[in-house]
Length: 206
Length: 281
Image 1 (tube, chains in turn yellow, blue):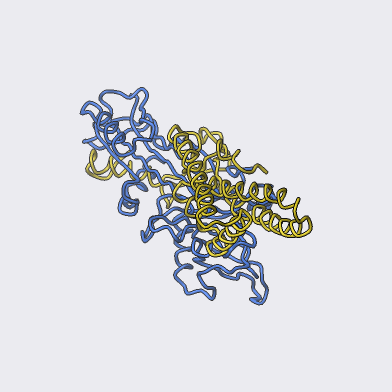
Image 2 (cartoon, rainbow over the protein chains, first blue to last red):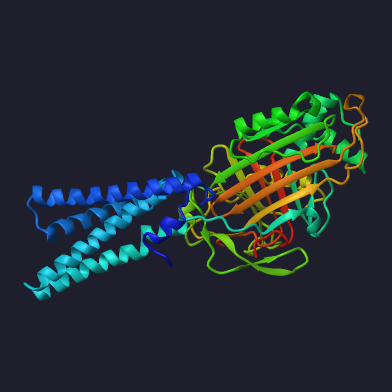
């Protein structure tokens, strides 16, 4: 399974087709916005640390607690919202930024505190990293990835003459053959009615 | 055959009130009176993304009938792709392994999106569980569109099949319209682009005086249809001129799929899937 940013760059789940120029533009905007949002989140955390004179240890724990709380309360709603507003790349990138920050900060302080109090540090950070890893593995990123949509190729393209087990009918009351797929679409009837009403101005005789 | 064809078409109802506004366009006229230019202008204005309609070889004195219909219905929450291939069994008992979409164990996530329109235990012994006929609305939270898939018996015409289903839906059911948390869904994917020429009338002429006894050289219907876990897409154009227990909702047997404007009496696309010819394999 691909993870992180890789899918984001080549499969933006925007609308129904992933390869139009507009979608490429939107993906680029999403990437930039996502980077800005992630950077903004990091800035907020740095600001929090210095403003309230908290240790990195406390900052990362607080951050993790907020994240778990938000995740528990809102669960998949941000992802559903993002999917329906074609903003899944931005939200996913934001999630990725949060994960990266949490992991990196924990790794740095794990090494730092290990030198002072190895047992406590191992216990604390082992537990924290375990929790974050579990969330990352089971929660939004994976779910967002599942929601990604890339249209698959058509199963059939061409003239109906090449279809032996499919019947196209002009009207709903046309008898259907047994063992065949049957397709009807209103566009043919609309075209007929247009000829009937605007050109023939009476029932059409063929 | 041509006479029967035209009689059926003349008696067919006008579907325009049942179509979502802004999703369709229809125009008829004479080429020498500028109908092609009108169609190009209107299509560019109303459907700027649609390809410019082409009428190869059309005669200057030809009539032209044209209709365009498009619907894009995006499921609010895309359904899951089934991890294992499903087995579609057609009316003759032939089985085919196909990829499918749906849910298994995550029904609650779709409780607002999917609605049970009809469900009936068809087993003679009602205590037996497992032989059901059913119909589901796959986008019940969409205010404009309705995508219905149904496992029901085929009738002699699509009209009768639809009527049968409508009657079944109108009868109060022992089942709630909300799906149960343990229900599962498996539906096959469809994605095709078919060009069909109605040979029943090509080569014949319009006999109406006002139609200048015009021959019909091209009576063509183009349908692009896609049904998958993310939603439904339909693009269709028609042109005519001269050239001149949990209940397991498994749509793995012949089934009906139709698209309808929510609240409308008639659908605008109907398909009876009887065999695997158009299924993704």
